[in-house]
Amino acid sequence: MFELLSTLIFAGIAIFIAIRLYSTLGRREGHMEAPPASDPNARPSLSDVPQSHLRPAFEGRAAAGLEAIAAVDPGFDPESFTSGARAAYTMIVEAFAKGDLAALRPLLADKVYQRYADAIAARNERKQSVRTEIERIKAAEISEASHEGHIARVKVSFEAEIATETLGENGERVSGDLGTLNTVRENWVFERRTDNANPNWVLTGVAAV
Image (tube, rainbow, N blue to C red; front, side, top):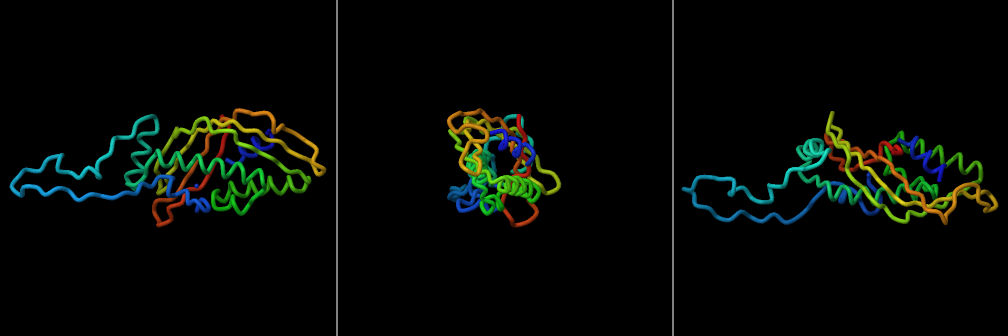
C-alpha cells in the first residue's frame, strides 16, 4: 500500500475509455418541452421562463467555482460529475496496479501519466507486481472548483477502503497485505479546457489528506 500511496501522492477524466466518462463528468441531457402558449397582450413574468432554463443555485464551499464552470458549460452537473469521478478513481487505481498504461493514457494529464509510467517501469524492473482491491469508496465530494484562463478545475475529496500488496518475482509478498483494508483519503484534481470542442476531463494531481 505504501508504494501505491507514495506514487499517487507524487502523481499529483481525456476520453475516459469505453464508458466515456464525459457523459457522466458534468453533462446532462434531456428532452426540453416547448413552453405553453401565452397571451400576446400579457406582461412577461418569471413564470414565463421555461423551467428547463432554471436550476437551483449551487451550494457549499465550491459553489462559486461551480457557478463559474456552469457559466461556460450550462450542461455541467456536479452530481453527474461526482459519479464520473468515482468511476475514474476506480479505473485509475486498478489500471496502475495492473500496470495498464493503455488504460491510463487517456485518463491522465501528460505530466501525471509520465510519473505513473515511470513508477510502473521501475516496478517491472524489480520484477514485482501489485494486486489492489477497492472494497468501497466511502465518500467522494467536490471540495473546490474554479474556472480561470479557459481551464475548468474540480477537486474531489475521496475516502476509500483499499487493500493492496506487492509481490516479488516468485510470488512472495514484499509489502502490503491483500487481506487488510486501509482507509485512504486523497484529493484528486480534474481539469479540462473550455475554449475548444474537446469535452474530456483528465486527472492533473493527487495528494494525500
